[in-house]
Length: 108
Image (cartoon, rainbow, N blue to C red; front, side, top):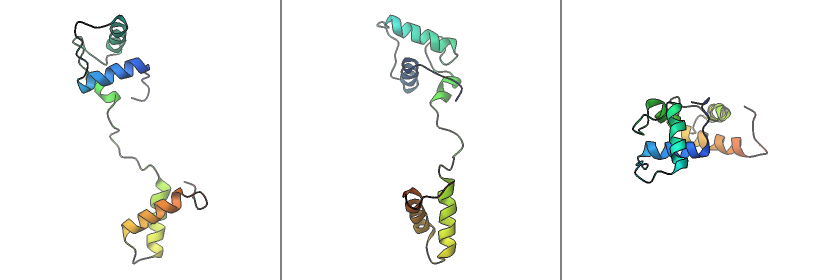
């Protein structure tokens, strides 16, 4: 949910609810009541202060594994093609080193 924006208080309370730390007992402060109402109005928690599916999706990891450095994978393939005896792991380590150093960095 990239379009959803939460205040820091809303994010903290929702995270605590999802982890089971927030019990909503008798000592709920006024600011907590306002935060709970805001989360409830957005559909992130239900009437019993339990997270809904939309609330769980806020802190869920992304479903698709994204390659954070597409240039490093391309560089590793080039290194392994140039050195056929080199293992894929060694090529990946060398590509990561070349990719992250300033003087040999490549553009993505």
